[in-house]
Length: 352
Image 1 (cartoon, one colour):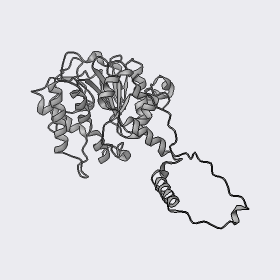
Image 2: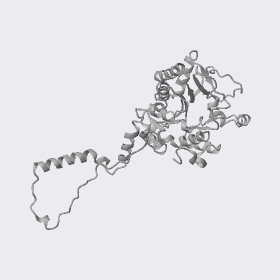
Image 3: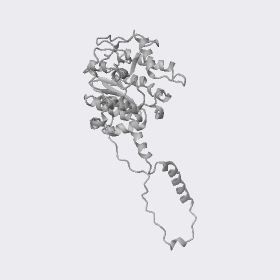
Image 4: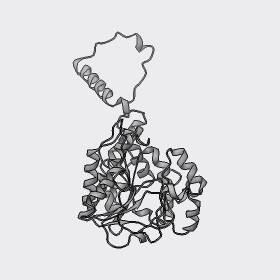
């Protein structure tokens, strides 16, 4: 493991090495002497130092500060070279409220021996520090740091700001020469998805529609729906470091800039991704993954007949078409997919 992944024990730079004696009662009656200029200057200097550093003395912030100083210098390039296998990496993007889902997702990946390829892009220092404390080197932060307070509330501006960074993060990875599989962390792997990345296409993605497709459905981009665009999910994507994949991401970024979040139109990143796919489809080699293997949550959790008919074909289950952390956890539990209950030690993060 690279040397920069090991923490050093920090000494308290503010400890006082001098012994201070308490004056005796006899000495307390001596006349008070006026300090000289040298003594006054020394006292003034000490007060200045205390004013600068006292907020950190004996406070939890001191540990947090030292941790930030260490991991903020850990670059995306370093992180990718550490986790990538055969030029590929599995990426998720999290803020602190999503850490339980991160753990659940990681357990499912560990069951298929792909956890060593995972890079967590942390959107706050708390997530960066926590993951790297338990699993050194597997989390990186790409500045600037967002205000994560509202990032988990679907439809909020914070959520938009959080998800809108996705294409730029992925583009940086492609430009460094790596293939990347992106997953949202409200997913569970039932099988290894990599054998399904057939051929040598630029971009692989999944349909977010609940309409049932035939098992031998086309792998082309589906036709536009009522809103004039397809309905592809932006939560499970695989991209190769090709000009075509980079074009998609650049167009995605452009579409997000055209239609930003507002109070009247609470946008998210998925429509922009679909516009980007549709507008570049003739220039990019696209591949729609099989629905039976990568169903949307609106199909898997709501159509028992289809689930029974396609039993044994499911690869990644996405817990979407439902809003709220507690509701998602309950649904996962109802279907035996909240793995942290019984398999926490199979996660690289342990019990978190």
